[in-house]
Image (cartoon, rainbow over all chains, first blue to last red; front, side):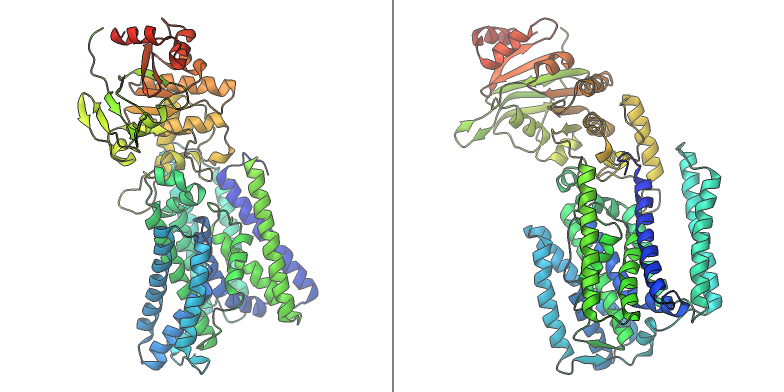
Length: 382
Length: 258
């Protein structure tokens, strides 16, 4: 790639790369099984990637900081167990149990972040230890039964309800209008500050492109049960994460620390506080993922959040163009990355391949993505 | 010469490492609109002195005055508050961020009544500052990693100038640059001076020193070893003072400065 490509263009091409990957994966599986691109399967796919996509949003932020969190699966597991204990064991209302689980997640993150920032130990080690500790707490909370059932209808409906088609269309129109409005506002500010702007035709083309995609997704999902509620939740989280990372001081500081920690410190950025906040944030997001998964399973099991979940989250982030070396990545691209990883697993399921093949395929994809990241970094360094 | 209060003055500044006094009783001044080069061999005490001015090291003796008033510079933040900005040799830029983001690093502007960054306002202001310094920078939304060494140096210097600072310290500003880029940095330094800043350039490159400095302060083995002027004195005079081959001569000059 031309090294002088402007930042925004690089970000756009990053999105194009992951979309291209998605098209290749979808084309491959569709050619082997006609049902892959059916409305029903795509709807299922979105339900399947809700947890992975949620975790990937958190993982991108921590990777941009130049750190990593290997404990998010265990935090999801322990938060789900707490949720189930409070609801089933103690009869708490759903909102109080959800709030408690999220706060617990944030508190765990503050603990991790404080140790990492204060003592200067690599996050890799602390969160690996956290993985063991919180998995232990999860096993202890879930108890001998192996799972705690959740009968609360509010919790159960999180991952199993759909927007009424009419609401789906309204939401789609609102999303398009919001996107166009934000672009228009930004353009107005650029004109006021006498900065270069794109031609109105180019802006209109971008908005029209987004509108087509949003309407196509809505139409497809409405032809089955409607837009899954968790997908709306995931998009909302990704949008909030995107604004946080690219539009606020905090996000700018996270990018700066990931790019050059010493420079950030000398510029007066509160490095330690930012590290603690990022770990609090990713852990709260992991707790949210745990709640979604408990809602999907109608229970909190001792296996929830285990296995390859957090490695898949790293894979999703890296496939979405996030660098393992820190300082580079986009939140919305991680959701696309999660869609790629989820599509491969869904497609292999559809073909009746065993778990062994799914693991190998995900591992190979992760290695390819990381190698591309390392090569891209070397090229940038030249 | 009429007496102008120096913007920054060091009087008998001493810094000890154990029993070793690195800079010992060093005097140094720089006035608004003046470029002073601080030169000396490795180990002469230049870096220690710079760190004392930048707030990274506390001094053990003597005093630092700003506009004639004594100050204590306890940290880099305090140095910034006093209007002192330091451009270190490694530049301290975030390669992954664009030019505007680097210029505003740690001092981002927000839009009124919101938590959101004023991206457009920062970019417009950055463009104005860069244009004012006539630094040859391409579009401001390029990541810094795509820029040349000279352009990176220009960003670091512009950042120091952006914050209403009055004293700018430049540590070996041309160490890693090619010929054309070096000339560009010289221009930049002169522009800072013409804007009324007090500029200190630390270097042991005689070409640099004679190209940019109005005055040259030589340190040798932690002590003052003479004051020189590019128009009046030759490179040989300065080199002699740095190496100590003409200590007596330098001592005489110090008795009768300017």
